[in-house]
Image (cartoon, rainbow, N blue to C red; front, side, top):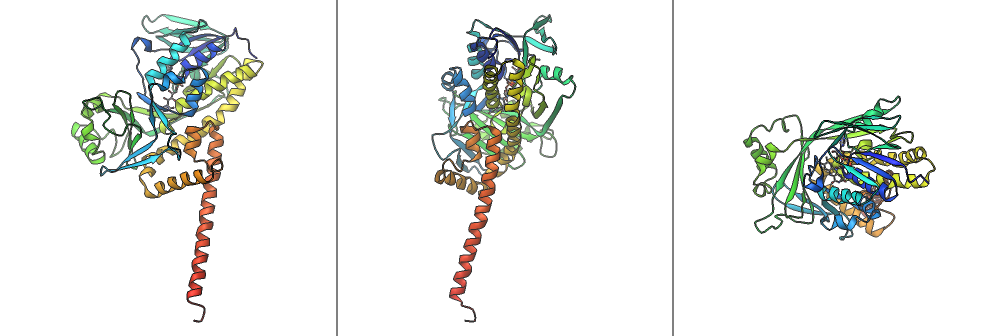
Length: 449
Ligand SMILES: Cc1cc2nc3c(=O)[nH]c(=O)nc-3n(C[C@H](O)[C@H](O)[C@H](O)COP(=O)(O)OP(=O)(O)OC[C@H]3O[C@@H](n4cnc5c(N)ncnc54)[C@H](O)[C@@H]3O)c2cc1C
């Protein structure tokens, strides 16, 4: 049990930082949350990343712990499955689960951030400071150094612990990297992403199926679209940075038009601002970050993307970061010292973040390539059937990741075992069928007959 009077300095008021501030605040700690951007409550939200994201069981559970889930989900759009768009305009629906009521949720980042920031601010022991960019951390004292964005003034804030919740390019992690024996790796994808828009129809209606995550899988690249409450869709094109078919090769409006009319012909008529969006919106990169340790004694810790940025293809980065928040608070409650709590938090969470990092990369191949293949569709159907016939015994990986809170590492290991069993079972079935066929042949044409 920790000293509730301890003072936490949180660096980064994005998705996880705001939730953590609200959680630690509810636990009675004194919290100062510093964010380099301006106040999203004042209408200044700059997402920096995608406009909306998929929120599922893990993220919802963490929000529920703070009584915030209903408020966030009030604005969410349920997505019950994937809608696959062929080049010929054909549509194929792939439910996420055999239970049709199970769904993931398209949620605006701005809403999520506003709700969690507001929850933190309601607490008298939490102070939120915008326009403060962290430039360094003294990991011994510990103290974080900031520059006020509007004035350039330097500010130093000491606390009992500094927590880096400042995303994939974390300044707090940079400070930890100066320590001896700090492991660090980052791996960029060869693909980047660009956000585009399908606006609502003239009456505010959705111009495609509302309750689905749309995918245009094209083997080496893909486009996806998630619905927004105003009837629009945010599309994201995942495309190679370099090469003959790449962002670098799309130089003129006619290059873009010809790519889109060849690859996404059904989407083009719905995208009146395609060229504007394409040439105005930035091209983002996607990185997997792995590092250890996630803490320096009980003085500094990392959480969310700062500790383990992952690529977005399982829709789990924020969900995983929210789970981190829950686990860190649990460890603080359960352990006698902050150092023990931080060490235990890392012990519990790191194998899971490693697992979801690998699964997210693998899911990119599944989404952009396999979802279009008939064999894959048959496999998904078989998975759903097995899930129905053997509930609790066979649970598809997607279900475990998105609709349960089974730790990611356990889910990955179990999915691997299930896949092996499926392969062995299918091989055994084929052998039995072959044996029966041979028996029939021998009955019809007896030896020597
Ligand atoms: C294209 C894309 C789609 C995604 N889709 C999904 C999805 O569908 N579902 C899902 O769960 N996840 C998704 N993610 C992942 C998700 O966005 C991240 O995992 C999540 O935002 C991590 O939260 P965080 O708080 O750790 O980091 P962030 O949300 O990045 O927040 C970090 C905050 O720290 C602030 N900051 C940074 N540096 C400093 C500094 N020096 N000083 C002060 N403040 C600083 C930033 O301004 C920011 O507000 C997606 C990511 C991308 C790129």
